[in-house]
Length: 251
Ligand code: ADP
Ligand code: MG
Ligand code: MG
Image (cartoon, rainbow, N blue to C red; front, side, top):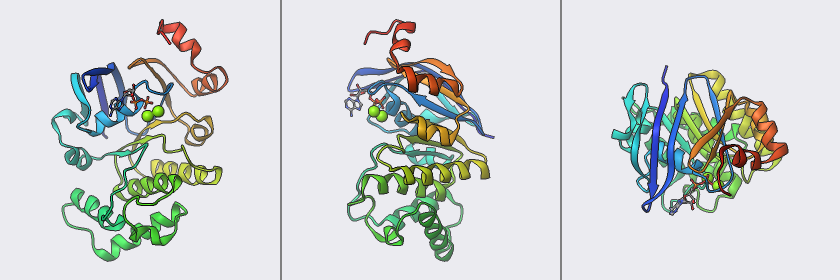
């Protein structure tokens, strides 16, 4: 069982402080939703956990399963089971989607996966996500539609079987049917293995399908409000003004 523990995390980008003391604990079999207005640091938080070098941690700690995450490279973080499905997946010209996936899987395995087993798993995941089978052979994200990029992130998640999956606005750009397919795939993985989820989303509709166990509002670089499912409903009907007022944050 692997627990993520974040204590007093401060993160800067270009010398500007974005995260101003994040405290968060996410345990196995928990689903945490991070909500909040745009530009408050949600993506910064997930990127800092994954180890994106653009973000500088100036204070605080992150541990996963008792190990010091901040001391690890991005690859090491992936090997201990941390996964980030990105808000804006990058196009990687010249890198074939399935070659990329097989390399990512093999980097986490003691013994490389057989080609036969890999193809079977990749084809299965692509089918589960309602994507065309030719997606496996195209360059990673090159010319993929917004929705295809997001679904391909979930293909990666299914193949890598992380123990902590972070999904950054994975629901944005998806039509209603795709939303259901992605939510089902995430939920199915959650129910079939030891997994914790950290999900950034603005949409009640998606969160309704995923059913978070904990809900947080990130505002001005801090988690200001934490609650349960009812918080999603409150935000959906009332917006965030009351959070600004309650915690004395300037708009
Ligand atoms: P959210 O995901 O909550 O919308 P972000 O974490 O993406 O917010 O951004 C938080 C703040 O950091 C914003 O003010 C944003 O403009 C700034 N920021 C994010 N990435 C960069 C970057 N690469 N360069 C400069 N500022 C950035
Ligand atoms: Mg945003
Ligand atoms: Mg964001």
